[in-house]
Amino acid sequence: MIDIITLEKYFFLLVIYSIIGWFYECIVESIRQKKIVNRGFLAGPYCPIYGFGALLDVVVLGWCTNPVLLFIISAVLTCTLEYITSIVMEKMFNARWWDYYDFKFNLDGRICLWGALAFGTLSILLVNYIHPFFMNLIDMINPPVFHVMVIILLLLVTADVTITVSGFLSYDTKLKDISNNINNMKEALDTKVNSTSAAMKFSSVCSKIVPDKSHKKDDELTEDKEKDEE
Image 1 (tube, one colour):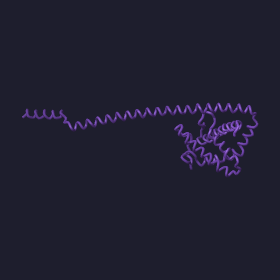
Image 2 (tube, rainbow, N blue to C red):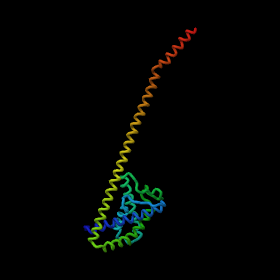
Image 3 (tube, helix red, strand yellow):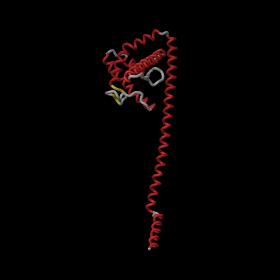
């Protein structure tokens, strides 16, 4: 059974790796777009998908010492996580948070070969160097101090997630209301146009069935006038 200290370490590492992922994303996208880009779903400087991906690598592949095998398995794991996360977030918020359609060898724009190569390489560095470094660093921190640090991080991240998600859900609700109003207005306009068109067709049919008396009266006046002239 996992004790509270282990859970605190995992959560602390989740935040650390999420922050590292945020820096990585910002640097890569800023270089690619040739401007400063602030990446991430949350308000804080962290990308949780990198934190979960890193922990997934460490937990599942911590035993692996073969770099080639580690590269292949980690690339598959992280890309699978990225693909599933993309679908879930799109279903939740009706938006895509990343798109790889501009990259060659992409799958539905959710993952791509370049990302798999990058994640596989980073996973080798993570398992062999980065994770052991942070584990040693955590062990150097006084336990009561570390406990307080984790509580503070937990409160900050929880508040960030709550505010951000509620804000997006509220925004999505407003967009749906606007869309419904537009559709209602369109339906009302279509009904009015159809009614006007039906009335015009009815009038046209009636004019063909019932002779125009005004024309008939004009013809009678013309005949009377011709008789008088004779």
